Image (tube, rainbow, N blue to C red; front, side, top):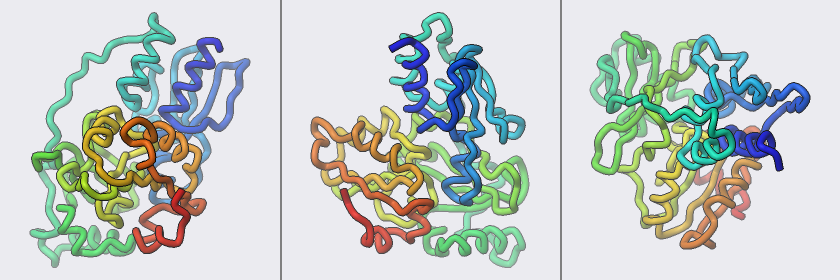
Length: 304
C-alpha cells in the first residue's frame, strides 16, 4: 500500500466515506465536516461531497462554505482541525516532511456576553418568542430548554442563535453549540476550540447506566444519558473515558445515512473491557434520533 492509499484511508477515518475519487488528478471529495454535517443532521439538505482534497498539492477546500467558514487550507491544517491525536500521529508517519506541529493556544470557552437563558429571559420579547418557537417546531419542550440550560442571543457576534452549552465533569462551561434560528446562511457558529478536548455535557453522564452515542446536540435532547459526538467518530478523550468508566451498554445511534460510519465506530469501540457491551442501532435512512423522538422511536428499531 502506497502513501497515497494510506492517506486516503486516514482521511476517510476523519471525514467518513468519500464521494468521488480521481486518482490521476489526486482529487477526492467528502461531505464537509462543517456545512454538510449541519445539513445532514438537522435540515436534510442536499449533501454533494463539496469538500474536495487534492493530495498531490496537499490542500483542501469546501466549495459550499469556504468563504463563510474558512474551510480551506493545507491537509496538515485539516488534521489539526478535525482529526484527533491518533490521526495526527499517523499523518506524521505518512508525510513527516509536511507535518507541522500546532502552536495555536485556545482560550477557555465562555458563554457569549449576550447570552440570555430561556429560564430567565423576558417571555414577551420578540427574540425570546422567535427562539422558543424555533425549538418548539423541532419538538423540543420548554422543560428541556430549561433542563439543558439553553438560551439565545439577540445581539453581538452570535446574534439570532440558539445556544446549547456543554458542562465538564465539574460543572464548568467547556463548549457550546450556536445554531441560527433566523435562517442565516451560516447555520452554525461554534467557539474556536478543539472538540476533541471536550466531552459534551460530561456533568450529566451517568456512567453506571446505558450510554447513547449520537451525532448532534439536538439528538441528545431526546435521550437520557446521551453523548453527542459532534460528528461520526469518538475522540481519544471520550474513548478513554468510555473504556475506563462505562459500566453498562454503549449504544451507537448515528443518523440513518451514516450506517457505514456507525459500523466503523462499533469496530473501534468493541474490544477489550468493552467487548460485548457495544450495541448498534440501524436507523432508518435519512432519519435521526430527534426525528424519531428518542427512546420510544428507537424501540421500533433493531438493536444489533
